[in-house]
Image (cartoon, rainbow over all chains, first blue to last red; front, side):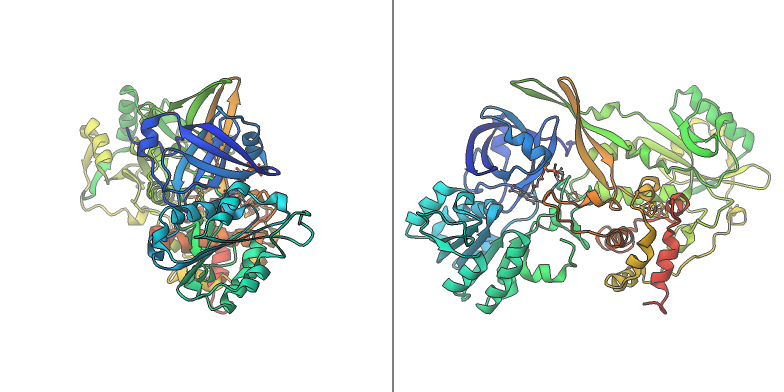
Length: 278
Length: 341
Ligand SMILES: Cc1cc2nc3c(=O)[nH]c(=O)nc-3n(C[C@H](O)[C@H](O)[C@H](O)COP(=O)(O)OP(=O)(O)OC[C@H]3O[C@@H](n4cnc5c(N)ncnc54)[C@H](O)[C@@H]3O)c2cc1C
Ligand code: SF4
Ligand code: SF4
Ligand code: FES
């Protein structure tokens, strides 16, 4: 019989990490190992995660495609499904349907510098790309990460930030909004766009990847343009509300573009062509 | 296959249906329900409504039910078991009396559900449904099939199309192999009708707007205020989407009873504010005008561009049903009127 495209994989939560207030990471393993072996995805893709009886929710796959056997998601408790997810414990079972959407074309970025710019809880899609690139470090030139959150406590993946800080082959700038610093805060203070402006990464042979709340994206694009980045070399993701993930339920489109099929990854050049419906 | 033209005498049509009942076929058709005309299961040809313009609801729910189970599950503290659907359980159905517009609407639905990844639930339902259409010999002011390449005698989507002649007998066009298999179940009831012309029996449906280059005219109107202006009175109830034969938007939800549950999809609509609302409160389609624009753009620009089929067949139901008399043909007419843009 033909495949039922709505059928999720059953996944076991093998590890829960508290990242920040109301933000958690789940490491998920396939209950059926055969399904796990067949499963592949590429960095940038997303999936539908479900609590049976509560419904589905859309998150990116936050783990890199270079690591097999599990997937990770990081989510903020926001509404019905994410609250139900937050109440789960290690060992519990959830549904996982995917992967969906397009990818960050990291194979085309060979021998280029990469600048990652993330704000708030938008690090998850970026973290997948960063690790995918770090796992093939030789393919890329300089890798720089700018990451900001409201307060020091709101930064996610704190242990990994520490690891990146210590690695010689990746440059990390963390920042918190003015007033969000703790007494022992050693990073920058200021909004992400201002910090990017301050450290002015070169646009020469460089790809910029920007993920964050709309206002951060809006204010970061002009800074990148000023630094000489062409729209084609700036990547970001859109997060329109989704249900199906594969172009049928009809809610995620921006003009004729379906974020779930044609996105969620877009270049600034592609965004400029879209009507303002995101 | 080439369409074959036959004559089906009115008495023979009754006999044909009787034969199909005898073969235990599931037959659904338009039945008078008080003031409404609705599709329901019939057990005798007498139940069928005659003399009606169009059923109140389209035939879409036969292939895309209003609430549809996607799979079931049982859940306890430790475990969840998923029970997949058994598509073999989807019954075969024969729908009689579907109008040409509604049959044509199946093409739009097919384009949406059939695009990669194909929706096997929809496809199985469609495969197991046979449509015996009725050509229209009357229309009302809301009908505008002729404005969008359809027509009162359009055969696309029907397996057999019946056109009633003045004598009460039917010109039967046998359009698909499914239609042929109906004929094969009672070949003696059909007489050769080659050369017969149904045209003079069809309703006269005037053009309500000029659809040439409609896709580009819609695009040109995108940033104007025509949608906002027209949708001022829209109350966002989504009745238009529910009665529409081509609207396919849906929601996915879970419902449970004790330890048992199912994941379902339910009809939804771009006319509703919640449709695109993010949990953060941000809404990419904030106003009713923008939502009306989405409805029209989707049907007349995005679908033609992406799926090579329009998302409207001119049945007029949305306008007949709208509580505040929003009229889609009128709205398009404003957009296509060059004096306005
Ligand atoms: C491609 C993509 C990737 C995402 N990645 C992440 C991620 O990695 N981490 C994370 O925390 N959040 C992410 N989101 C946002 C996340 O989907 C919503 O916060 C979440 O669905 C809210 O669900 P809820 O049931 O708790 O909220 P409710 O308000 O109860 O949800 C109602 C419904 O609205 C939908 N919904 C509400 N807000 C959004 C939104 N912003 N985007 C999409 N659907 C929404 C959900 O489908 C849900 O069914 C992503 C969204 C998209 C589209
Ligand atoms: S157009 Fe009419 S039927 Fe459709 S949502 Fe608006 S008020 Fe309701
Ligand atoms: S949009 Fe209106 S006229 Fe067009 S097919 Fe749907 S209900 Fe009929
Ligand atoms: S999420 Fe359903 S169409 Fe994009």
